[in-house]
Image 1 (cartoon, one colour):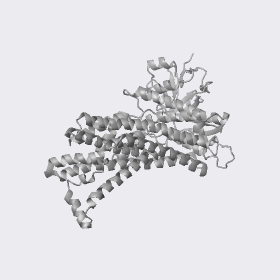
Image 2: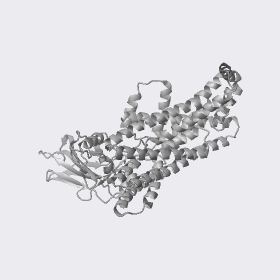
Image 3: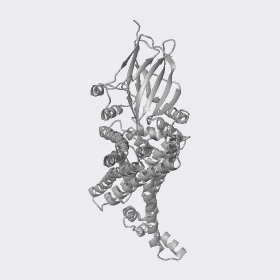
Image 4: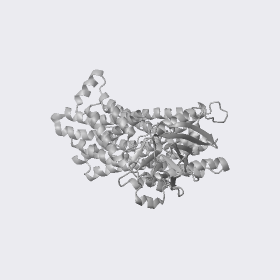
Length: 221
Length: 366
C-alpha cells in the first residue's frame, strides 16, 4: 500500500508539473465597434456590436459556405454561421459586460444578427437588448467588451470605438482609447481573475489605459 | 470559465462507484491546481480551441503569460507571412522559422499532448530515446491529421467550417476516449495486477513483494516475462500442459507483453495526434484560400517539429525525475523499488484522470 501512497503524492507532483497548462492564447482577433442604444424614453435599451474578424479566422469560418460557388458570400449564405456565432457567444456572456458599481445588468438573446464578408474579412453585426431598459443618472454605468479567457483578442477600432445612439443630450460617454495593448500587457490583464472587474491600480498604471471600456453618465444640468 | 465544468460534473454526479469517485477526486485536484477552461464549441461555434487550462495564479502564471504573449505574436506574424508570400512572393524562410517558434510555444500552452506523453513515459520503463520518439511520432501524426483533414474536408469535399468543426469535435471525443482507455490499461498493468499478484502470493510475502517490484522493473525493458509468472507459476504450467506445448509459458506472456506495449504506444501516439491543433487547421485553410496550400502544409509540419521539441523536453524531465528519485533512494533498495512503483502508479493514474477529465468535458460540450 505504501507504493500507492507514494503514487498519490507523485500524482499531485506530476499534476503541478504537467497539467498546469498555459493560458489560452488568441486564435481569433476582433476589431470591435460598439454602440449604446437608447429607447424613446431616454433609457439605455441595447448594445449594438460590429465585430470584424481577422483574415485567417474569416477564411476558416467562410470555408465551404459559398454554396452557389460564385465567389460572393451573401448574407443568406452566411446566415447559418451567424446563427451559430450568436448561439455560441451567448455561452460566453457575449463578451459584453455592463455594470454599475456591484450591480451587473443582463441581456436578452441577441437580435438582428447578420454577417458581412468583404475584403477577406467577416464582420458580425448583432444587438443585445438589455433585460430591463436602464435609466442612467449621474452614477457611472460601465461597459466592457473583452474576453476574460483571452481566446478572443478584442481591440476597439481607432475611430469611434464606442458611440451613443438616440441618447438624451445629458448623456456623456467617457472612452479610454490609448492605442493598442501590446500582447504582453493584454495577457497580464487576462491573468486577472474574471470575477475581478476593477482592474487593479498597478495594471492600470502599467497599461495607462484600457482600450475596451466605456463609462456612461447621464447627469442633468 | 467553470460553465462547462459544472455541466460536466452534473453529467457525472449520479455515478456513485468508489473507484470513479476516487478518480474524480484526482481530477478535481487537477482542476484545483489548473482550473481548466474546457471550451469545446468555441465562442463562435467554429474553430474551437483545444481544451486548456489557463493559469491565472500561482508562481508559474507570469511564465505562462510570457509564453502566451509570444505565442500570440508568432501566430499573428505567421499568418501575415502567408499573406506576404501571396502578395510579394517572399521566400518561405520566415514562415518556416515562425511556424517552428509557434510550435515550440504552443506546446507549452494549451493541449494535452505533453501531459499524456510525460505521464505515459513516467508509467513505463521508458528510455530517453523512447520519450523523444514518442513525442515526435505524436507530433507527426497531429500535423498529418490537420493536413489530411483540411485537404480532404476543405478542398475535396468542400465541407463548411461548421461541418469541419463538428468533425474535429467528434475526433476529439475519440481521442480522449483513447486516453482514458490507455489510462485504464496502465492502471491495470501498473497498479491492480501487481496488487492482485501480491495477494495471490500472500504466503510467500517477502518473495512476492520483491517479485512484484521486479515485475514493474522488468516490464518493458527486457521483456523478462518469465519473472512475471513465478508468483503463480503453477497456473501457467497447467495451461501449458493443457495445450500441450511445453515452452509456451516462456514465450506467450513475453510476446503478449510486447504486443500489449506496442498497442499502448500506438494508442498513446494516436490519442495525442488525432485531435489536430486549431491553429494549424486555421493556418492551413487560410493558406488554401490564398492559393498557397504548400505553405500551409510546410507550416503545419514545422509547427509539429516545434511542438515535439517542447514535448520531448518535458517528457525527458519526467524520465529524469523518475530516474533521479530512484537513484536518490538507493538503486536496488526496497525503497527505490517502491519509489519506482510509485512513479509508475502515479503516471498511470494521471493518464486515466486526464482522459476522464478531457472526455467528460468534450462530451458535455457536444
